[in-house]
Image 1: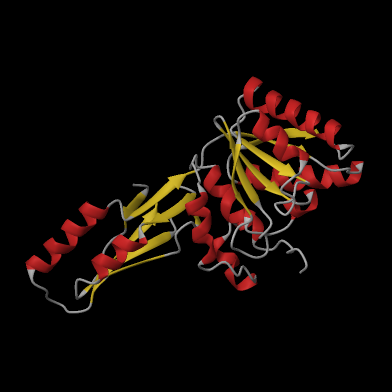
Image 2 (image 1 turned 90 degrees about the horizontal axis):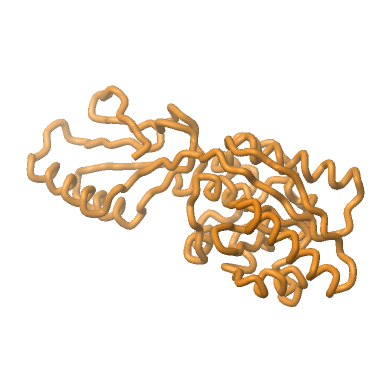
Length: 270
């Protein structure tokens, strides 16, 4: 789904994305199909942001003639494992943010500009920030709880960005507020750098994507591999985040996997 064939070229058939979105590849099924010699199917990376018309996979055979039963075996595996290749389109969602730290007016403006740029580049709408601040624990917890109630329960926001809450602080008041409302943290930290202190949580029908500082939303991090998937409506879980470890060293040479908006952004130091 989400791909269309190009005209054959010699012994190769390319598959292109039908729309902007995120490529999904069933890697185990792909390996199983490629074990049928001499069939060849090769793709871009699972979880990669792609654009309409971009070639995301190719099908090829090396010999000029192959037995019919070989092709039929490949078709059988593809149907059994399928869809092997899929491009999930971006949805037009409303995305809100919570700033859980003391932040200046200039800092808030930069945070909102960075978040808005990323969200709107993927076809959704950024609807603003609730500033909770970082007062005493009780005040911060109450502020976080009220922000979550307003955004998730009253307004039905499905994706919430949270700045200023670190995965390294398991007793952060924001996590207490989240759990009091029946939410849960899916994972504290992800196996990728930069961005290893990212966390992901769920509250009712919403997903929360958190970074330890608001300023990190203006930079290129592992969050730029996660946010596009959330904006396709994908329900990410801990297992999906664990897969980020393969290819998780996100130097500039890996920026091709990011959406276009992130390819020239600065990365956090360290």
